[in-house]
Image 1 (cartoon, helix red, strand yellow):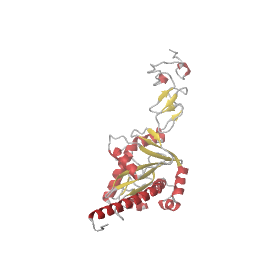
Image 2 (spheres, helix red, strand yellow):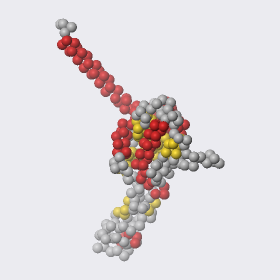
Image 3 (cartoon, one colour):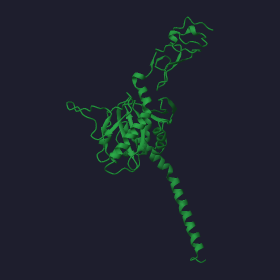
Length: 321
């Protein structure tokens, strides 16, 4: 065989390329499960850090198995919601969202007319964690913000990035002091701008040393673009969660036992948590009364089939039709 022939060179090169490609594909497939496990554990550790269960360094020392076990022990429930704050579907107990998955949701979050399915993670201690995603200076930034049970006070935050400048924009991840600035701040869900990251931070009361604005923190010096990108990401995502958090505060939750239709009716209040029969909620929809019992206590708009209606509290004057 003439090894100097062009055909030999082409065939030889092709065989080498195919063999190397096959080896790389085999190795990649073999490592895929480990890569996914690392990614899941890393995401869980970020969420646990934001929720105040430990530091990032703590979870890095624990190893993947211990992080997954810790997350499973602390998580209460997780589900998705729409922009209207209404629950869409429950999530598996070990489900978390990778940066790639958040990127897909972000397209719908940025579109004000979009209908994203937003993940909500509630831990057993009442802390709620939600993700954010957006663009930094050189690539994507993302992270998790944890809220106290009141639905507005920030318990903690953790952020990550793909390629921000070391020592500058990368401080959103590497500088614990920056992330600590979020602790105790409050998200202004009722405002057009939910949260702000500004140069110099919020003005401070000189007599008390306390911030005069609860939803502003200091931007990273020398990282204007990254700070601005993170602020935009936070505002886009928290605005999408606004309806949920505004309805999740204790004052807006169902108060069982005062449904206008009485205890005999099953009452669906459309609140963020499962309700019991009888509740005092702005959007109270009484069920179990064969007719349409809107404002049933005053017998108004009761134009349905009132079978056995006399059994319902306040409906004694209605007879079976």
